[in-house]
Every structure is written in C-alpha cells, then in structure tokens.
Amino acid sequence: MTDLIAVKRALISVSDKSGLDRLASALAARGVDLVSTGGTAAKLRENGAQVRDISDLTGFPEMMDGRVKTLHPKVHGGLLGIRDNADHTAAMDEHGIAPIDLVVVNLYPFEATLMRGAGRDEIIENIDIGGPSMVRSAAKNHAFVTCLTDPSDYDELLAELDRNGGSTSLDFRKRMAAKAYALTAAYDSMISQWFAFGDQGQRWPESWTFSSKLKMPLRYGENPHQQAALYVPAGPHARGIAQAEQVQGKELSYNNLNDANAALELVSEFRSGDPTIVVVKHANPCGVATRPSLLDAWTEALACDSVSAFGGIVAANRPLDAATAEAIAQIFTEVVVAPDADEEARAIFARKKNLRLLLTGELPDPARGGQRMAVITGGLLVQDSDTGQVTRDQLKCVTRRQPTERELADCLFAWTVAKHVKSNAIVYAKDGVTVGIGAGQMNRRDSARIAAIRAREVAEANGWSEPRTVGSAVASDAFFPFADGLLSAAEAGATAVIQPGGSIRDEEVIAAADDAGLAMLFTGIRHFRH
Image 1: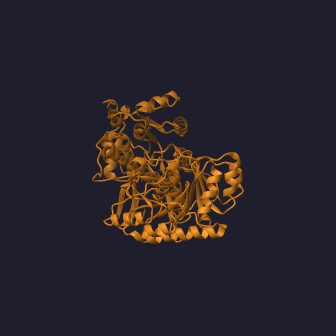
Image 2: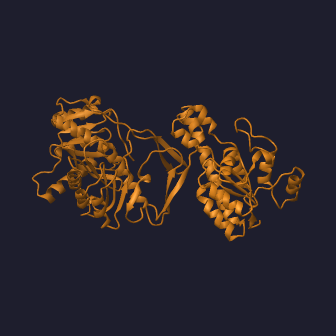
Image 3: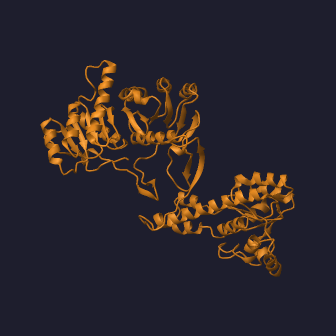
C-alpha cells in the first residue's frame, strides 16, 4: 500500500462553507484542479477561485432540484478506482474516468433543520444522499483518496501537504477515513431516530441506533485500574452536566461526573423554587435545604450530615454569591455546580485550586421526557426518564389524622428528595430541610433506622436537646411492605408520612399509623432508583 499520494484533483461539495475560501485558495496555489457542485461552486467563484462544475466532469447536468448531481460513474469511479490494479485503471481509461485524490464534503444540515422545527417535506429534503455516498466511497479507498468531512481538519490537511510536497500520508488518510465513517454513521443514526420517533411515533423501534462523540478521556473509571471517557450524544439532546463549563479546578474524574450529575438532577427539581442547596456523596444526597438565601440553605444542608459532606459535591439552583462561596470553601469539596457564579464567588473558589467549579448556564427541566440507559452483560436496558411528580391535589390521606399545612409541605419536599436517593430510600424533612437520609439498604426498616441514627448523632454533636427528626415528615420511595419501617420512623419522632401505597399490607400499615397518631399520605406512584 502506497504511503504518499499526491493531491492533483479535489472534489468539493459542502453545506458548511466555513474556511472554504482559504482552503480553496491554498489548494489552487498548489495547482490542484478544483471540481465542485451547485452552491459550493458559486461560493468558490465569488471568492475568485477557478473551479469546474461537476456537470463538466460527468457530462450530465445537475437535475431534480439538485437531488441528482454526483451519483455518477465518473464521480464514484474516480473515487473507488484502485490505482495499482490493472483492471481498474484499464476501466478508468476506457470510460474516461479521471482519478479524484481529495474529497471535501460535509452533509446537509439535517440536525439543524430538525432543531428549528421545520416541516416534514423540508426535513426529507435535508437528508443528504450524494454527500454520504461520496464520503463512503472516498473513505473506503483511503489507500489512494483523502476524505475531509470537518472544516476543523483543513489546517491539518494543508500542513500535511506542506510536509509531504503536495501529498498526503497513509496515516492521515486512515484517520480521516475513520472520521468520515463516524460522520455518516451518526448522520444515518439521527435520520433513523427521526423516522422512528419523530415521524412515526414508534415506542420501541425494531432497531435503535444512536451515536455519541468523545468529549474527553478521563483519568480512570470508578477505580484506577479501569479506563474511562466522557461521550456526549450526537444530534439533539438535553443540556446537562456533560455540557457544563468547567471554570476551574483539576481534571474531572468518572466519579466526579457521576456524582455531579446526581446533584444537578436533584437541584433541578427546585429550578423555579426558593434558593436551594444540595450536597451529594457517592451519588446520594446527604443534605438538601430550601431557604430564603443560598447561604442559609448551605448552612442547613450541611447540618444534615456534615461528616458525609466532606469531599462531596455541592449544587445550587441559583447563581452563587461571595458569602455562599466563602462558606462552601470552608470544607473540602470536590465539585461545585451552579447556573452561574459572580466574580467574587469565582475569586473565592479560585483559592482552592483543586476544587472544580462547573457552571451550567441553566438547569435541566426535570419534566423533560427522554430515555435512560444502563449497560448489562450482553445487553442494554432502556427506560423512560423518571419525570413523575405529584401535586397536593393528587395526594390521598389514608389516616384518621389529616396533615397540617407544614407537614404537607414537608411531605412534598421529602418526597422530591427521596426520588433521587438510592433505594430503599427514607428521607426525613422538617421546614424545608432534610434532617435524616437513609439510602441503599436492603430493607426499608434499616434505611429508616440509619437516617434516625445519623440525626441523633448530629443533635449530640451540636448539643441539641433532641434530633430534628422529632416533628418531621418522612418519605419512603416505595410502599412499606410491613409496619416495622413506619414504626421506626415514628420512634424517630416523625409525625407525617408520605409513601406510594399499594402493598397487600396497606391496611396493617395504616392501622399502625393511626395507632401512632401519624398523618399518612399515599401518592400512587413510586420512585425506585437503583
């Protein structure tokens, strides 16, 4: 296989014309024959370039509103011909097919057309046919043909030509070929998804292809012996932690990103509410508080479990101010996530050179639909995002005692937090503050007990006369299968309970709640999080 191939003829057909004039002038200066199509040829001529129309090469005019212009043997023969194969070269000579050494193509803006809400006919017209065909042909024959699909590679091409006396190396052509096939795969993936979901409303299509793009390699995965990287979806997708701007701090790790995502998802539940702070450790919240100011919210969230907060992730639903930043900076924090931060806050965090500050610009909408995926051995689990929310009107009081207004508000607050706690999840809350969180236990009773134990430890450490679980509301992410978990919450001092209901022992649990003088609400929906 030949290493260096001279670039003598280039076929250029681009939708994204950025950098086109500079590329064309540089190629022309090297004596490269330029061949182009429709709008690209017109743009090249505007910039003073000498260019041949594709119809001059093929002997056929562009037709059918441009649908047919490059699908011709004189194009694809010039791309696919193996130059050191006698049969191929003989066929090219016989039919007057000139070799094409460089293809510069990017595709119709299908994604942009979708994103601006175009109608179906316009979307269909923005499905590129000739472009992907030329890209695939050129990339397949990368032994002899260079294929460029990204304007960001123009400078590297020109540097390659300078280094090699007007030729490209095999290594460069191979890298560009890989990039070309990744482009056509992603492009077809978007089109197939639109046909399945957007156009036909399929729930679970027979084949579901999707693509993603490397954003950055990571130092390692959950453990140092595991390699890892961050990818972002190609095509339309929601903004999230992967799109946040890292203002400062050392490189993000796999665990940082996973934990920061958990914190962002939870704080986004309060995107339109009062100032709220979330503290997360190992993807579970260890403190959440809503208060009139971010500083007060931080103080209360930290008080829930300051031991677990050490080395954790902090997320805010409002831009960070100096006072809150100063308070957060008093403990070791891995990552801080917020929509924004003022200059004073940024300066304060800058003193902590290892602390990562991520600014999202906006918070995700927790009600936005979508799918979640989990890789299992030999397969991929896919489910809808958990967008379930309950309002006061949807709650059903099943006990003799009705909740007070404060208890009702605390029930809804605790329920919102419990949605983001690993199952089995128990959350105690009082006055818009979490006062005890039990996560990830194999039974619900132990989650209730662990949360209460932690609350007692906090009370003892602060010299309080009683833990803040006294008079609190408690949320359970799924029903109480037995009364023991509910009774553990009552022993901790909870006076109101919110849970899905639906157990075959509901009557037993309701009777236990009545005996304990609790108010209990059923939501009719559960929030398992594994």
